[in-house]
Image (cartoon, rainbow, N blue to C red; front, top):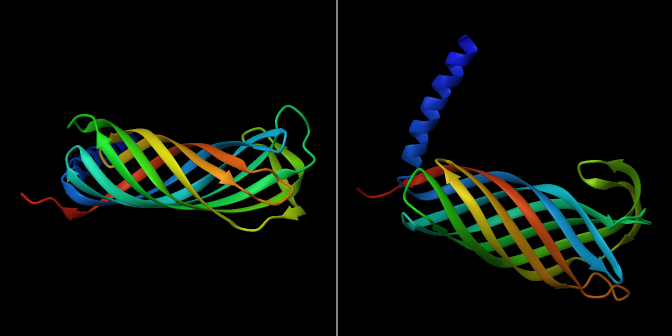
Length: 208
């Protein structure tokens, strides 16, 4: 019973904080994400998944429009579909992007549309698969097959999400075209479907 009362009290405090967060002109967001990643390596289709973290900051021009910057880091493991892979492509992707959001409505619970564009740095290596993990698919061992040079690329990322007070849930599609890992590998596109959870902190109050 005490735990239930504490939970209800926490919800009341959180709701109050959420309403105040909506009045903030500048916000700082911290969050984590899971991703589904797929691409082609020469004639092979490869897919898999991973996870990452991100930080962002947005300036709210008005109740419906916000612009900001975001940095994120994610790790993913992808292998060939439908058959045992000789290797897994392990990628560490770092991104710095400019982003905009448009909120549909002025309520506490608001859907939003977003769009980002920016720089992506990809560090990839081929490793031997030894372990099968149901959630991520094939997960690699530390046995290195090949390591590729760092690739710098440009990409875009449309977003669809829902803002609930100080929390945001969204789905982002990162499209990173024309990635060249090595001479023997054809130019490839990285495609990532990302599921994000974000906690926002107000750091500059809107003028009355």
